[in-house]
Length: 261
Image 1 (cartoon, rainbow, N blue to C red):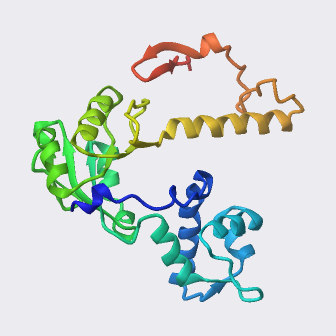
Image 2 (image 1 turned 90 degrees about the horizontal axis):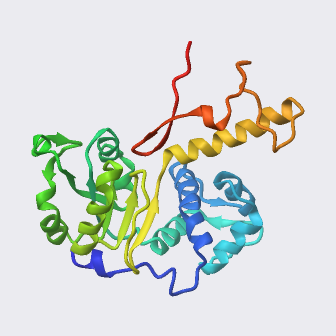
């Protein structure tokens, strides 16, 4: 559908900060849960707790939407669901293509949350000829040779990349050239895109590394070490030096050496 490519949500033109935009899906998720339980109204404190933010920040965010709630009553849940959905552009159908139907791509294709949040998976695309025609999540996988025609025929403006790192930039370039203006990247690499194209990167390994950092700090605090002193492994094994921890260079960065049993 042509409107899927040309229509952009009004948030930027209305001056809503990016940090607020990033929190709107959190509020929407919490509000949707309340709506499913038939809760009619919610206070800023209750909603903030459910969304994982403080209530002052929530009230400030909602002021950008022109929604201030009612003293002693709170916010109307159904109205807020509609209001936030509208701001996020979720009141229209957004066709999406997923490129790279390996384990991750197939899992994304089977994710039931897309349709309920305004996104329709228009096509699944893979470079492996053996995958062509294979049904995944009720859709036949199509070969990358068809990528441009699929995007044009379906008016796709959002692409999801779940390919290996080495193929991601080429896929990205083809998506952009075909008219895609927003990309969700699951490939473990940084994509280069022209101005006007938005990229959101999801890297599970980075998130795990950040959690490992916090676990190390907690372990250090428990043992009385300073924050700058690496904690010893909880197994009691001696900590390895950075040089010893890196065994070889892999296609996606340093790969830990295999320790002897």
